[in-house]
Every structure is written in structure tokens, then in C-alpha cells.
Length: 434
Ligand SMILES: Cc1cc2nc3c(=O)[nH]c(=O)nc-3n(C[C@H](O)[C@H](O)[C@H](O)COP(=O)(O)OP(=O)(O)OC[C@H]3O[C@@H](n4cnc5c(N)ncnc54)[C@H](O)[C@@H]3O)c2cc1C
Image (cartoon, rainbow, N blue to C red; front, side):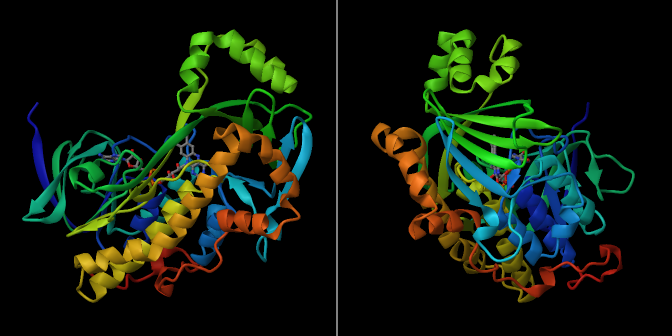
């Protein structure tokens, strides 16, 4: 078949339709910019990713006046976390004790969140999303990036060339290209961005099981047991999702020893799971998440910016990745919008995103590195961890750590044009006409 070629011109080309890419696209489209989002997958389906949102997410959505809208979609609120050591409760933290006002984590699946953002965004005709479109290269003019080239296969094409489906090679020209393509970012590689930090020492092994009758569904649990440490999160539909904390490489040894040995260790730690494991014959239901932390040294180059996991991937501790990525998307929207308004999209302008996000990202990464040491790696500190949790409710420094991990002290400093009105978007006039 002939490989068709097409050129598209946009203000901003966004590579990746994860939480950060979709929120950035929505906010910029709301301001009237012509936005093209390219996503390599054919839909938003994700297995075991970004399912938990935090009080920090609630704060962000409240600030944008999107909370009620997002919460009109399927979700489960989780108002507290409880930590157990060998079945004995050693700590309970109610999220609403950390900040004023209602505060909770929520189980909100990534497909649900992304579909909700798309629902809002597609009302703007200047917003385009192409699924099944994989970015292959950057378009360059000298040292400046002026867009991307991508291969589009048949798939949903939101607001793109009415009624016509394009399949072939696509060149998207843009004043700004934003790489929001996740922890294995192609844009990071193509743009020769350098890493400042790369840390990987632990894994989480995920599986899900039907909620036992004795289980409190609305609580997020940690268990320090004899063989392993476990994280339990309520999942939609009456299920519990469990993450078994492992050291890097430990899973290969577990697989070598066989499923029966693994089942025995888990059920020894948690007899309540015996019924679930009766039916488990192999490792098929387990999904391994490598707990990687990364930080790109400089997020911007001429014409191009990295944000979200592509710029600052965090580990799963505290379930903060999506919220942090979306926070950066909001700041990126503010910087890019003002850059268009003042006709200044220079490297110095794009660099403001990192300057404005560095502190929060580094705070979270620092807290996670400390937590990792206590929760998994160092055998001596691991023994101390239950004691620390036990004292946690009484020690202001530890409470402050939770507060920093789960909440943001101040709202993000953004232009109020990004705050959504309660009415539907169709009636609003874009504030930039392109
Ligand atoms: C197993 C797992 C569990 C997690 N659990 C949580 C949790 O409970 N809470 C939480 O807050 N965070 C969690 N995270 C982290 C969270 O998912 C990420 O921090 C968040 O999704 C980052 O958002 P993003 O938009 O930056 O990138 P991503 O969500 O990774 O999105 C990047 C998108 O770019 C697309 N893409 C990549 N390359 C290309 C290309 N070349 N062309 C076109 N498209 C491309 C990808 O398909 C993807 O859709 C988890 C992560 C994993 C892996």
C-alpha cells in the first residue's frame, strides 16, 4: 500500500496522551491554541497504572474547578491509610487531618480520568487527538525543534480532518513540541536530553483479588509481614489491588523457585488470601512494576519541552506520579500560554517550567528515597520501620513528611484563565484566536 504523507500545522504538538499530555492539551485548547496530541496506543486502556489519586490531586482539581466534574465519573474515595505490622495496627492516618477541608485519596482509573479529560477537550474544535500515531522523529530547523514526524495507523482521530481517516506518515509542525511520552520517553532520546538522576532499587509486584468480607474497602493498607511488605488498595468493582514489595531482581528468583513456593509465602503472611491463591497455577496474573526514579537535567531546548514522567519520573511510594505529572502540565500550560500571548517562546521562556516545578519534584523524590530505605531495602532500617510508623502519629516531623508527600502547601501559581467555569465549554470564546 502507498505510504501517504500529510503535513499539519499546529501551535503546540503534544506527544503522549497520558494524564499530563491530556491535561496540557485541554488547558491550551481552552485558551484557543491549536493543539495536536499524538498517542501511539489505540485507546486509553492501561493495566495497573496511575489508579490512585491523592489529596494533592483533589487540591489541583479544585483549583481548576474540575473536581465535581471528575468525580461525576466512577471512583472510590479512600479517606485514610492504616499500617499493620504482623497483623497489629501500628498507624492510622486520616487524610483530612493534613489539610483544611475535605481531603482523601481516590481510586480513579487512568482510562476513566483520561476519558473525562477528553470529553471536555473534544468540545474545542482547536483540540485534536490522534490515537494509533507513533512519533518517530523530530523536525528540526538548525538546533530548533519545529515539530515531529509520526506514523499514523487507523484509529480514533478526534477533531481531525472531518470524516476522513488518515493513515500514513504525518508531519506535525508546531511552535512548541512537548514530550509527555512517559518514563521511556522517545522525545527524551530523540532530543538528546541528559539525565541528572536515575535510581532503581526496588520493584512492586501487582495482583488483584476479590475483596474478602472481613476487609474494610475504603482504607488503603500497608502490611509489614514476615516474608514481604504489602500495599493494599481498593479497586473498583469490589476488588483489592495488592503490591508486593521486592528488591530489584528478586522476582526472577521467585519465578525460579516456582509459583507454589511463592503462594506459600504469601498465604503464610496473609492467610486471608488462601482462597484466592487456591486457583492460581502460574505467574500470569502478576504484573511487575520497576520502581524507577529519574530526573532530566534540563527539560527544555529550543522549541521543545519535556514534562510529566518524561522529565521527572517518581517511584510508586505515595502514589503521587500522575498528580505530579499533571501539576507540571498545568505550569507548562501557563508558561506556554503566556509565551504565545507575549510572542516569546524562547528557550528562556520554556525553561521557566522546570524552574517553577523543580522544588516540588525534588521534595517528592527526596521523600521517596527516604521511604524506600525504610520500607524495603536496608535490613536494619527495615526492622526500625514499624517502630517509626508506631511513633508517627506523635511526631510532628513525620506528620510533616506525610503532609508534604500527600498535599501541596499552596495552590499552583497560574493564570485564572485556566479555571473552568461551571457551565459547559461550548459557549466560551477562546481567549487567543489562531
Ligand atoms: C504499574 C504502575 C502503577 C502506577 N500507579 C500509580 C498510582 O497509583 N498513582 C499515581 O499517581 N501514579 C501511579 N503511577 C505513575 C503514573 O502512571 C505516571 O506517573 C503517570 O501516568 C505519568 O503521566 P504522563 O502523562 O507523564 O505519562 P504517561 O502516563 O506514561 O503517558 C505517556 C503516553 O505517551 C505515549 N507515548 C509514548 N511514546 C510515544 C510515541 N513515540 N508516540 C506517541 N505516543 C507515545 C504512551 O503510550 C502514553 O500513553 C503508576 C505507574 C505504573 C507503571
